[in-house]
Image (cartoon, rainbow, N blue to C red; front, side):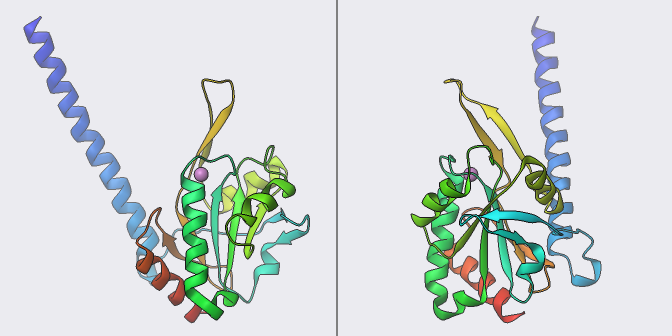
Length: 203
Ligand code: NI
């Protein structure tokens, strides 16, 4: 029994090390891909989409040309990540002052069943009306998620309801719809602001 326990401990340690290597490697690879020099920028993020905004109007990627934009995937029932992110982006829009007009901030719902344009409209009003809330059919949402390599997953809750796990990074896109980098979840306010200012200045 003692030997077995020791073996288990060894195995646990070995798998922890392996997991560390695998995820560390993945992280490094992703970081290189996302933040590497433009010459070696191989990660393609972004692409065509057609969605519906909180006023009920259709919006495509082509409508966004000429102004840089940010894309965040989430859902209005989100307990923490989405309200935090939308609040932080609202603060950033305030801090940008008049330059905020040179940027579009998009919030794409990964829960289109519950997030109708009306629901999105009410939700976004509690943050900043300049944020564009987007929803669509399951197929439209799946397509935009694939284009941005965003991840989400429906998770059942104990009360029979569900929540969503989802990508928490914000994608920054230039005026031509090209990916330029990300803003991390809970990025420091000054770093986030500097990134947005660079995004605006570079386009
Ligand atoms: Ni969320």
